[in-house]
Image (tube, rainbow over all chains, first blue to last red; front, side):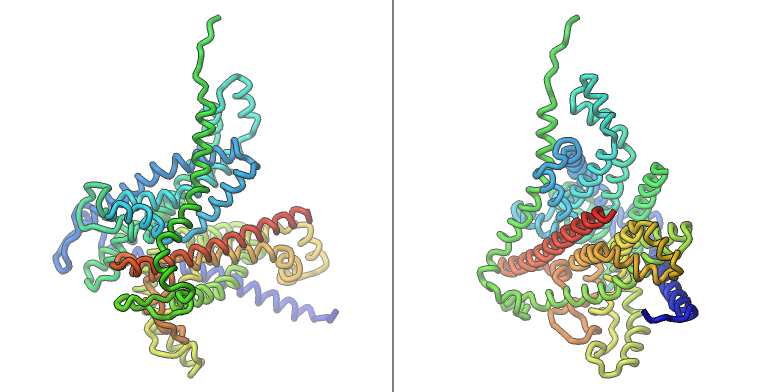
Length: 281
Length: 309
């Protein structure tokens, strides 16, 4: 082997250290750049009207996105109501009954595939399956799309969290004659509570910033959400529409909505991660 | 002592949870089925030529996927070319170089990049990053390589290159975090013995850590690729949305996902809609294959690493 001087080897080492440090700095700087832009451009749009009023036509002073904020909350809530129970149940089956069976492996595989499926494909699927069948865009179809995106995330996290619960706990309950469902829901769930909650929160955070699956399901609307059976206003599609519009006051509103979405998604993520980290200490 | 007779709810509980598990399985199947059925008119009408035709003219009912497929491939390739080396050195920094406190903070910040919604990247990309590219980066690239085919044309900011760079930022945290985990799996004893022989940090990394974890890193890249290829909103904002193929990376283009996002609600005709659904089917098929390959590869790697230990 060729001998190289120590100075040369140290020089190379120093160079690589420098490059990797700079790369890490670059990553952090990009995060800082994006977040500071969102805050700087979003703050001017945030005021009382932003949270209380309907959008105004371009050029008119005032106007807010109250309908879109409410719509996003309602669609997300509906998605949680559909996605979380099924996801949890699937997680329970994987951890408690399916375990290493062939069927369970297939379900896991499908959940992983579903997690890696682009969200716009879920949108296309829901469009063909629901919007085309019913003949109109609707808030409920948007919620279904979001629920489908949540489902595998909740199922896999739930499985992981339930698998962490020691078997002794289950066996102790079963030995006392507690039925399986009660042992699972009352005892296993209780000891995995924090983990399950974090998993659900992370799934909600991911879903509430989604735009692509809502583009052709919930669509958007300038009115208050009155029924889930019609196009429903929501923040993310509003950002898309307003950002692409030529009107400056609409673009300002889009920045305000971006700040709101970014703050709530990142806030939820940081809080649930913190919760997980705190529990694991 | 009198015993109460309980209704045994256990079978019901078991079946209910099983049904939920099977629902996941059923869902993947029905997505595939629905897309195939929805795309059927286009599949029949255009046949295999759909993938090789560049025409996209709703007025004359001419639809070909080539420019969308090309845009998806090129923007993803740019993204991966930037993200992979960057992720590797960042993971190296986090595992080998930074003190634990710094590593935790920087690692947290990088992971936060993954939590930023796609549409926020789009807003930043369209209003801040694209003008920045047009004012500084693109004129500079054109000046250092005059006449180079990739850097031709007016610096508009939006286009293939900007979309690729934003994709790089978006997949960077995924590749970094898997690579970091892989690097951490290298047994300390192995690294320490290399250090004990007088190796520098870079030598240990190049000759011990990377060969040990290379397969995991490849799996991580597959996962990142799967993300990048279906990324929609950020790309839609900056790619320019033009159904034409240009050699220059400065030129506007489109991707499968951006075409879907832009045109789906406008598709008034059945054939137009079916063509868009077929685009979706192509994208779904590609991500399925990528996912499958990544999982298979990662599992094989985990088994091998397990055998080593």
